[in-house]
Image (cartoon, rainbow, N blue to C red; front, side, top):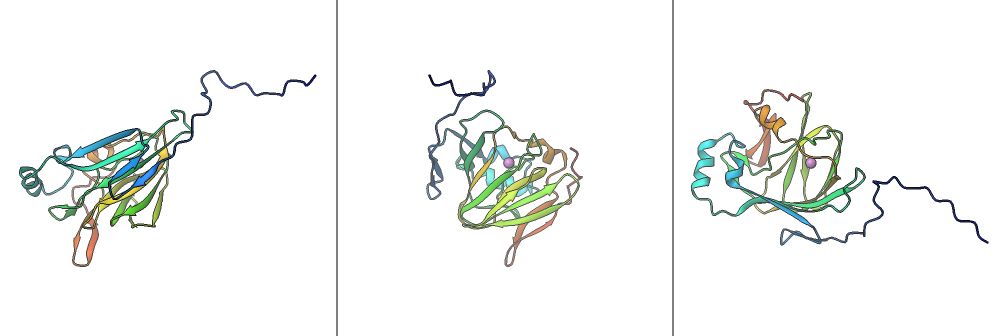
Length: 210
Ligand code: NI
C-alpha cells in the first residue's frame, strides 16, 4: 500500500487555483479582449481637475458625450496575491495649457506598486510622494515604468493620438483619489511647451496630507 502523500491543508477561506487568463491587447481599438470589467470617465466627471475653468466650460459646451478615458481590466483572484491587469486609454487634448490627464491616485494600501507599459501614443506618468518628491517619466511604446508603492500617480497624454498603456497592480490596492483633491491638485502641472511639454509648479498645490 502506498501511504497517502502528505498534504498541507489549505485555510478554509483560501480558494483553489482559478483558470489562467489569456488577454489580447488591442491598443488600436482601445480594447483588452478577455477582460471582465470596464469603466469610463466623461468630461463632466472631471470638474475641478484642470486649473483653467473657463477653458473647461468651453469644452463642456461642445462636449459630444464620448468618454475622455477608459479602462478595461481583468481580475479573477480576489485574495491579496491576485493582480489586476488592464488597459488604460486616454484621449488626446488640452484644457487651457494642461494636457489631457487622468484624475490620478495613491493606492488606498499605499505600499502597493504598479507597472505601466506604453502601447501606443505619447504620454508621461506624473509621480509624486506625500513628502514632496515629484518626477515625470515618459512612457512611449516599448517603454515601461515601475511605480513603487507610496507614489501618487497620474497619466498625461502629451501627444496628438490616444495614449494607451497596459498596467498591472495588486488586486487589493484600491485607490485614494481624494488625496489629490485635498492638496489642491498635484504638485506639478504638465503643460504645453514649444518643443512639446514641460512640467511646471502648480500654484494651487498646498501639500499632501496622508
Ligand atoms: Ni494605480
